[in-house]
Amino acid sequence: MLEVLAQRRDVLGDKHPDTIASMESLALTYHAQKRYEEAERMMLEVLAQRRDLLGDKHPSTIKSMESLALIYQDQKRYEEAEKIIVEVLALRRDVLGNKHPDTIASMAWIAIIYHAQGRYIEAERIKLEVLALRRDVLGDKHRDTIKSMAMLARTYRAQGRHEEAEKIELEVQALRRDVLGDKHPDTITSMASMENSANDRNPQEKATEADKVSLSSFSDRKLYVRSSDGHANDEPDAQSVGTGGEKVSTSGRNDHKESKGRWEIKRTSFDDLDEPSRKPWLPNLQKVAEAEPKPRRRAKSR
Image (cartoon, rainbow, N blue to C red; front, top):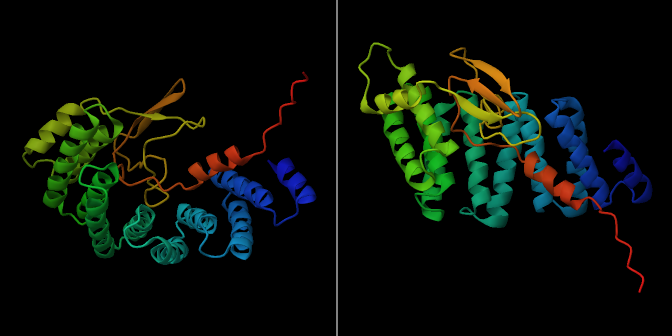
């Protein structure tokens, strides 16, 4: 990757789109390796180049802003991440409108940052707005709408509002069973979230019907996730937003993992499982890879 970047700088110059794409790819690699200082320095350069060449409102510029915000977020530099995402939201409202899915996703991201900072009232307000927009734009049974419900339940749970959280979690579970089936990872996540809610209450409290469903379904409480060999992980990240990426929260309850081939089995407290994955660098990295020049085939001689 470093060699490709050096060659493109030499042949194409620093401001060629392909050179900038290689810089971005390298920054994303540094980020994935948790080499945050190098990732930040490179992404700042990418962002500056794209602002200069493409302008503030170009999709590639905005994606670079998101990638930089995520670098800050993963270091728990929430104020800096918030500042960027607020700017991203304003740009998307201006370019795409209030009801575009990308605009709504930026709102959801701000709510995640607020939640990670313990600003639950502000997080709740935005999550309610996001949920209303997604119901209007996408419908009640869309995966993003259901995920917004789960995120709202998590904020209620963080405030000790367990009855409100449980009511939403039951609805989320019913919707996911109806739309995705019992064995889909999202459905299993909902069941795990209800178990977590039950554990958060007084352990002597009489189990509700929701608890009975959850606890019976999770007697073994094993969650299968892909390991870090390049395969996607369906779990959200408890660190990068206080969630948001692809790791499991470990609060000390039943935290255990063992390797099993390409897969890991993790026992977890199931905290943060319903937060969305905010890893814009994953699709970006794929796009960069797809944009890499491919060797030309020689024409067959007749």
